[in-house]
Image (cartoon, rainbow, N blue to C red):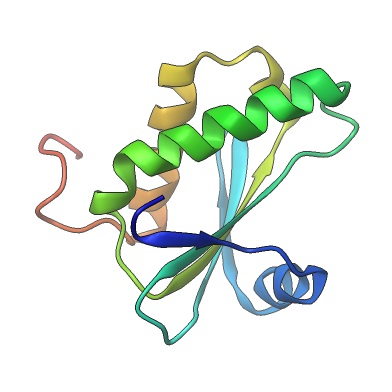
Length: 119
């Protein structure tokens, strides 16, 4: 990820959960908190309730790649935690990417010069 880093520490995740805003759709819950930095920090959480380790890792890769390809349309200076719901286990890459953009629009963290046609 060119403009983003990973969110790794449990304390950082808990801060975003506690102080951040959240929106959800069918596949994910996204928590967002400003970090007063120049880069975004992205954390991905997939519970054991979603599936076995192969399924969880597959979802993590899909989310990471979906975000990576669209990170230019996200604003900077944010801590973002993406929590997978059980429906994400059967989602395609296009559905994952679309769900991430949908949550970005709900949070109003997408740049206006991003993809057209996002009404």
